[in-house]
Image (cartoon, rainbow, N blue to C red; front, top):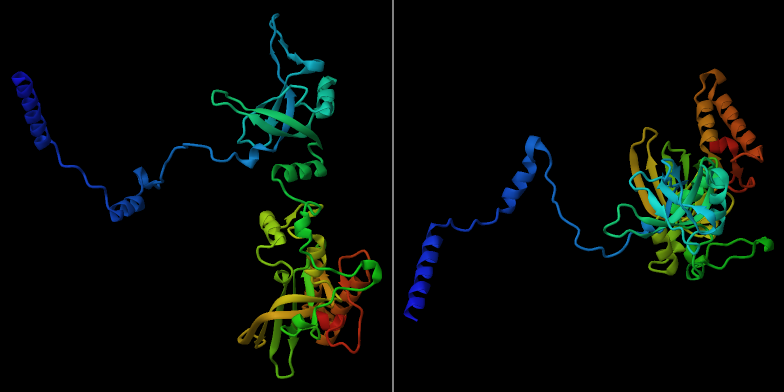
Length: 397
């Protein structure tokens, strides 16, 4: 027992001596010190960034659900020194997927008949892969184990020839899970207002109680200017010169909030879509067609609800007053950029003579554009008693 006590006492003395020789614990650097170090950067002034490590996967990325790519046959070394492709059920050769996204590795294709669509299996048996050659396909990552170099993917369908416009569009829609006009839920559609049947010839009208809370711009000559293929006309403008020399300019934005109430099923659906997606030949709308193409589109000849701003200013652009609020408009014309630019160039053409001649020539540009039934310009019916009605000379000015 005495020997054990002497040994423990010796250990305690040794630990005390060691602690006296050890440097005191370092205090962590202050925020000011860290901020200064971050500002100076690393070697050569390179920026410092925090680093970390992945500790768990909480949710698999939706990118795994759709992968777009090309398919080819996997060749392996044969017994005679040549190359051959292993065959699976139905004499289907082993396939490999090459994603179009360069950040993804190539993938082994699931060859089980339960996971390989019959159409793809049939084409894979054809000489040269049949329709699979130079075609885009969609697939889904099924597994990627920790020890595997490459993931496995199940093919879904053949989208079409890679260079075709419709194929590329379908690939983008599938890859990014873009929802179309027919994909709105029943709950979202139930949020839409009731409107008269088109066959009845009647139109949706601004409720009287809503009209009473808004500024009336329906007697002001308002027009929209958009790309020639635009369907949802979400902004319009007016500009008039008063007798006292003051220029009145108004800008009107479609008031979508009147039809989409916060936290409704339609609001949540629009939030998921975030935006309308435009392709070369089609658009995938954020809102149902009834809203984006009709009730929230500032089409000519019909009353529409807006958020508006109106300025009073000098001809040189010095703002004298401004007003912001909700309004009601009735556009007299849907113009396109090309036609509007032609009007501007005509009014600036010094070879046309005086101002009256320029104005007449500009009005002729609009008249011709409005008369072209196949063109992008649309106008409301002229009405001599309506100060906001279509008048090509007034619109040109």
